[in-house]
Length: 80
Image (cartoon, rainbow, N blue to C red; front, side):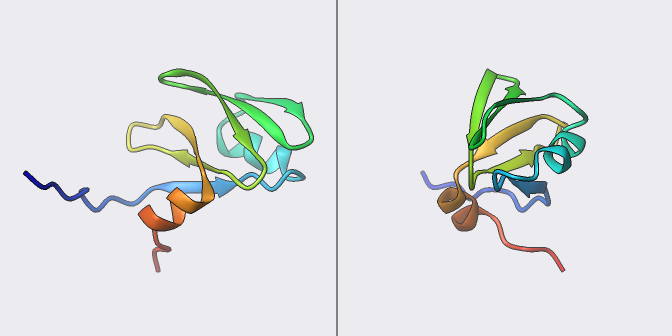
């Protein structure tokens, strides 16, 4: 059987290494700096690391999780 992902709109921000405050505000303050290129995000599956270049996604239930840029670009497109 084949399945297609339902079209949904999400909100996301890209962690670029020097936008900690912007990312922290996006996820309502629950972001821990590990060092210059990584941050720690609390997700439904436990703590996960977002590396420089990763996107931080707010899911449909308000949860947050990191996503690698190549996967993000294959999965999502900008909404006008």
